[in-house]
Amino acid sequence: MRILAVGAHPDDLEFFCGGTLAKYAKSGNEIFMSYLCTGCYGSRDTEPAKLSEIRAQEARNSAKIIGATVFGPISNDLDLFSNRESRIKVVDIIRQAKPDIIITHSTNDYMADHVATGQIVFDAAFTATLPLFKTDYPAHEKIMPIYSMDTSIGVGFDPELYIDITDYFETKKKMLLSHESQHKWIAGHHQTDAVGIIEKMSSFRGLQCGVKYAEAFKRVKVWGRIFPESLLK
Image 1 (cartoon, rainbow, N blue to C red):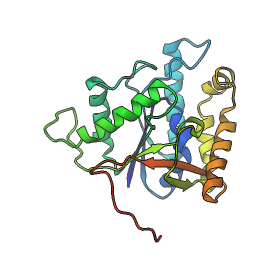
Image 2 (cartoon, helix red, strand yellow):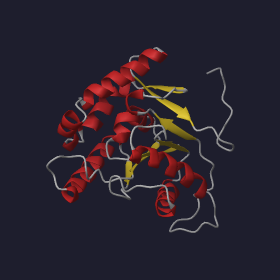
Image 3 (cartoon, helix red, strand yellow):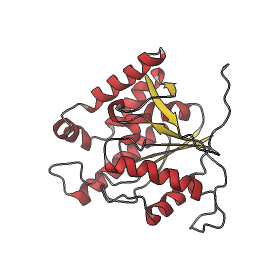
Image 4 (cartoon, rainbow, N blue to C red):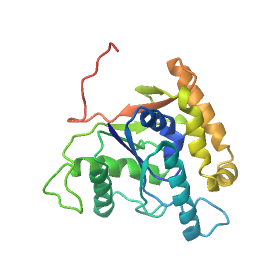
């Protein structure tokens, strides 16, 4: 199976679905990690162009831990909008990855880049299937289920699916720690600890479903992307 996860910034996937990606990678699935924004404004004292380079390398370092392929970015922070230009760029990411499943942000999250990413991916996922919509890559005609990953600190998010990441939490943490440039920024600007966030959130979602650590998701329920599931596993 081919799984494409699309986040707004270079560390978003590690926060919200890193354990799931690690778990699926370990099972032999092909993982694609895409971030749409450079991460250029996540600092007080590093010039944006230099920070973009640093964050791109950190994203590659993280993806390497699980053998994932990286796509991105397509925009600077806060210049990401749901328009034709960005849709075409994400269509080509989808057409290159040829995913069976897409994971992305909820459109109910706390900041503009997360919300825009969720909307752009939703729009692009259908557009990518159309052979007559010409881009640099041929259509990927498969209708893919789309899953929204948890919101920041779980605010306003009512999960429908939990993935047990107990055996992969340390990998998730290692992936997040690859984003070294962000630790001081998050501690200062957000007044919190990045590792502490994922420990608390993964533990909380795990408590909800009866395991030590879990990540939470919701399926995007629209016609053509709803598939039957069995109650009996």
